[in-house]
Image (cartoon, rainbow, N blue to C red; front, side, top):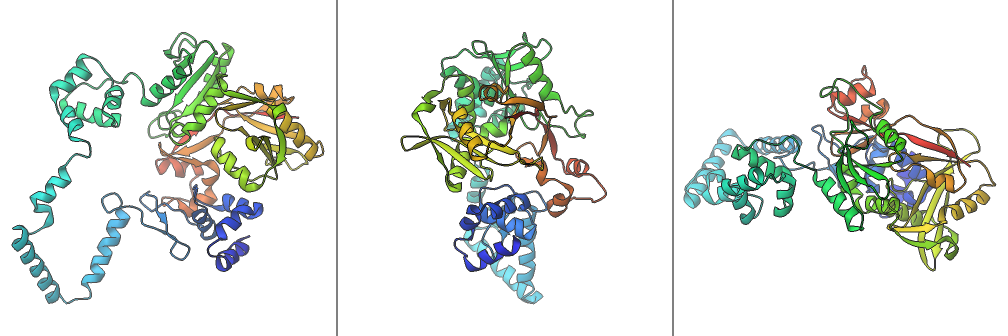
Length: 477
């Protein structure tokens, strides 16, 4: 595979990435061997071939330039030590081209020019430069409110408004409001009512014409449900990656069934609990909204009888799943779609069973176009797929953090078993798949890697955190 890819890079320098993407075997190899997660195929291909990541030794992300130069530029000197050291190194190299006497003359000439033009020795001493550096990165109107003790005291202390609520009014980040409250000496409330994400999801649900309760303590008694829609018996849990993950430096006990147990408790009360992480809300906002709208039963509808089944090309399937599935595209063997007139409204993909060496086929992806429900569409596509695979056994994994599996039962599947919770790694902002963090791969990109330590010990030492999901239902047909 490696030689085939290198040959394409050499012979098709302008089109190699597209050609590799279209080849299932080559694209699978790249995905499995790349040490980065990116939408840029050239960067993923470069990483896979050279066994390197795009993270510098100080944890900043480098940009991919082109094949000969690879990953470059991990940020300005003010934010990354790499750049600072590179600049310092270049200065030393430049100075080495001159004698000590020549360097002294150059410095004297520069100082003289600065004094003649600006009356100071260095740029940092210039008043016009200082005004630029010290100018707030927010509007003057917003800055005047934040620095006004009386206004801030009235809003945060007297009216008891949350920092999130004030931030939304001023169109800034809530932590900026909190930092000014600290500067004014206000006692910071442990919880500023509700997170911005929680408010946004609540407002979205209510925009659909549904009553949505915040902070319900009556259903699970000792546990809080973040959002609850009584008319649908559906609850939504807001999971911030940092606060819902584990690092032994912060906690003494790791509860790998935390999210699963809450899901089970809700189910025992007849309530479907949907978990949404802040990463998903930030990076897959439209898809999350579409999932919520579908679960709440308020999507627009078309009927399977109005559609036709067609095979899909890899490119069409990739675009469709990237646009409409929370996990995006996954290389598969079979791609089928439902077309209403000329529009693709639903699709599935399937291929080899990743976890069994038999003739069974795994359903990899199923999605309808955002904000649309295709009534009976899943059954129609599954029926066509079963014919295509000669009626071999079909299995599928259903994410318990998003679904109770009722849709699979409606399509004729049988529940085989449930799986234990799985995990991924996070720094609190981004997600790293556990498959990217095996010891073999960690040795190639983690700067603090120690071969005598386990995967988890290496990751915890590097300040990463482990997030446990709810596990999966395994269905069979």
